[in-house]
Amino acid sequence: MKFIINGGKKLKGEIAVGGAKNLALKALAASFLFKQEIVINNIPDIEDIKQMLEIIKDLGAKVEKNDNHQYKISTKNVSKTTLSPILTPKLRASIVLIGPMLARFGEAMLPYPGGCVIGMRPIDIFIDGFKTLGVEVEENKNGFFFKTKKLKGAKFVFPIISVTATETLMMAATLAKGKTTLINAACEPEISTLADYLNSCGAKISGAGTSTIIIEGVNKLSANVFNIIPDRIEAGTFAIMAATTKSDLIIKNCNPMHLEVPLLMLKKVGVNFIIGNNNIHVLPSKNLKAINLVTHEYPGFITDLQAPFTVLLTQVQGMSLVHETIYEGRLFYIDKLNKMGANIILCDPHRAIINGPTKLYGKKVESPDIRAGMAMVIASLVAEGKTEIDNIYQIDRGYEKIEERLQNLGVKIERVN
Image 1 (cartoon, one colour):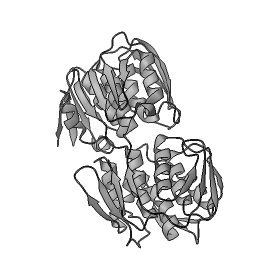
Image 2 (image 1 turned 30 degrees about the vertical axis):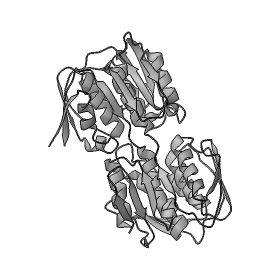
Image 3 (image 1 turned 135 degrees about the vertical axis):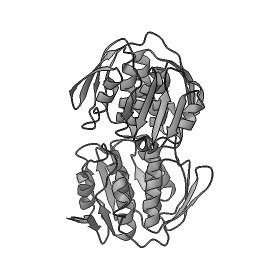
Image 4 (image 1 turned 90 degrees about the horizontal axis):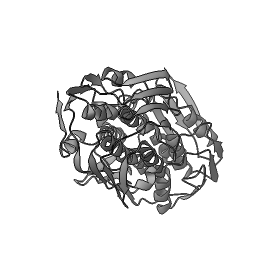
C-alpha cells in the first residue's frame, strides 16, 4: 500500500486526537494482572494495537470490541505463557507482557521482539530488571525464558532512562513480595496515568511521574475501567503539520500540558497558536526563523516529534541544528527529504544541519518508521507536485485512518495498492 499526495494546499478545519498508542499498548498488557474482565476506553484503531491484540488472543485472552474504541478483555482462562514466535517479532512492545505475566503466572517465554528499524533495540535493561526482582533468565536460539517462584521487591537503577522498561517493571512489581524502588525511572505522563490506574485497582505505587518510583507489593489487584489519555505525539504532529503548511487548524481532544516543550519550540520558531483547555489552535504564521533543537526525555522535546519538526525547519529562514540524543540512527530519513529538495547536512548519526527555507518537490519516497513516515506526509503536503509514499504500514502503526482525517481538512491524499 502507498499514499499518493498532491501538495501545495493549506489545511483548514478541526482534527481530533486519538488515544495514546504508547499507553494503550501497556493497558492491554496490564489485563494479565487481573482475573476479572477489564474495560479499556479510547483505544486507537492502529496496526500496533491490532498486533498486540493478536498476541494476547493467541495466549488465550478473550477480546470484545465495541464501536466507540472500547475493548473488554478477559485473561481469566489464560494458561499459555509462551508468546507467539510468529506474531511477537512484529511488535517490540510485546515485551511489556512479560512483567504482568511473571507477576501472574511466574513464567513467560519471549521470542526475539521486533518492530521497525527504531524498534530493533537491545532488551538488556528488561533482563537486568527482571533478574533484580528474582527472575531466572535463560536465552537460547528461540528467545528468552523467564521463570520465578515469586517476584521479590528490590531496588533497581536504570542505567539509561527507558519508558517501556519503567512501565514493565512497575507492573511486575505491583504483585511482588515487598517494596520495589525504581531509580532513574522515566517520567512520561503515560507512566503516571498507568500508575494511577493500577492504584485504583489496589496497587500501592508512589512517585510515578518522577525519577524515583516506589511500589509496595500487594497480594491481588481488582480490575477497573481504564480510560486512555489523548496521544500527545499525535497532537504535536498535527501542530507541526499546521505550522509547516502555514494553515489554520484546530487540534481537538488533546492535553496541551503534555506538550509544554514542543509548543515552546514552535513559539521560538515564530508559530502563532492559541492554547485552550483541551485544544490547540494553530494560526497561519509568517517569517519563521531557524532554531537549534535537542531531543530529550520527558518533559524535554520528545524524540518522536523530531522528524516532523525537522520538516518544519526546512521551511524556516536560516540554519538550524537538530541533535537527536535518544536513538542511534533516527536521522537516517534525511536523505529522503534531500531527495525532495531539502538542504540538510547529516553531520553524524545524531546531528543534522538544516538550511532553509527550501522549496520541496513531490518524489517517490518510503516510510522507514512510524514518525519518519509521518514526516514524509508533512513534507508532501508542502511540496510542489505529487508525492508517492511507500511502506505506509509503518504510518498505520501509529496514526488511525490518517488519509481520511487529512481529506476532511482539504488534503488531496489517497491510499492505493
